[in-house]
Amino acid sequence: MLQRTAQLFRIRVTSQMQSALTNAPDDPVAAQFLPTSQELTGDGLSDPIGDNAHAPVPGLTHRYPDRVILHVTKTCDVYCRFCFRRETVGETGPLAPQQLDAALDYIAATSTIREVILTGGDPLTLSLRRLHMVLTRLDALNHVQMVRFHTRVPVVAPDRITPELVELLASLRMTAWMVIHTNHAQELTPPARKALRLMADAGIPLLSQSVLLRKINDSHDALQDLFTTLSALRVKPYYLHHCDLARGAGHFRTTIAAGRALMQGLRGPLPGHCLPTYVLDIPGGFGKVPVTADHFTEISPGRWRVTDWQGAAHDYLDPED
Ligand SMILES: *Cc1c(COP(=O)(O)O)cnc(C)c1O
Ligand code: SF4
Image (cartoon, rainbow, N blue to C red):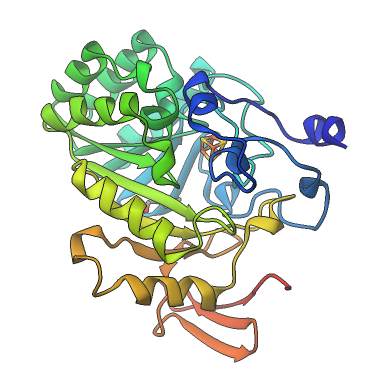
């Protein structure tokens, strides 16, 4: 069974995450990285958030006028079992030179773009030399004010956060923002904390994003621990994502009502700066919306009408119990 899972979805764990996991049943770190036969069951979408629905050139997603996502590589240091890009991560390494040229040409020619978001895969798996090249070329485009990294590296492979890398980020004309993907306080090992401190000390603004995952962090205590720990490490919790409809990841999904109740329970006990916005990326490429009453109407139990940022309505179904 596990062999079959390995044929379908890539497996990789770093030594840092190996050392953070325990043998406890439902260990929150193990459950994120170690494959199970549950991944063979259920349906799901191969492109759940619709990356390909708004791709003007390969490797670039342009959904909102002022910002684009540049998929600089498909490699990650870990392969998360719930990943929303799990069917494409690891396929190839960095974006091919001609594709990178085409993406940079598009950004250069589109003056409404204020922010370039580097993701993948994981952008910080690129070598320092390659990052330097990409960032220098972006920095030369005066309308690009910010470059944002979405990365799991500071947590799963903190050794990559070297003084040289931090110096490069701090030396840019554009402001570099770092969004750290982490789902449980147990992932925040001493080396990860040190990597975060290095970046915070250099003045790099730090945010976090997490995914709400059944049996991993779908409890008041787990979320409270995660968000307060991050805030204390100078990382502002930015987004809590409702788990996407990735293939073979149905067992990680919670209901919308459960996620909402958890967030409501944290408002009050936790200060506002510890609370992320709970969002759903509407399947099909319609963007992220906060999971609040002005965007969500329950039509019948487990069946939702979701209004996107442009006012269009979409149906959304909770996982079956
Ligand atoms: C999530 C996302 C962004 C960034 O959205 P923010 O709300 O600014 O974090 C940009 N483009 C696409 C296609 C996205 O999916
Ligand atoms: S690090 Fe991010 S992109 Fe890579 S496998 Fe994990 S969730 Fe997916």
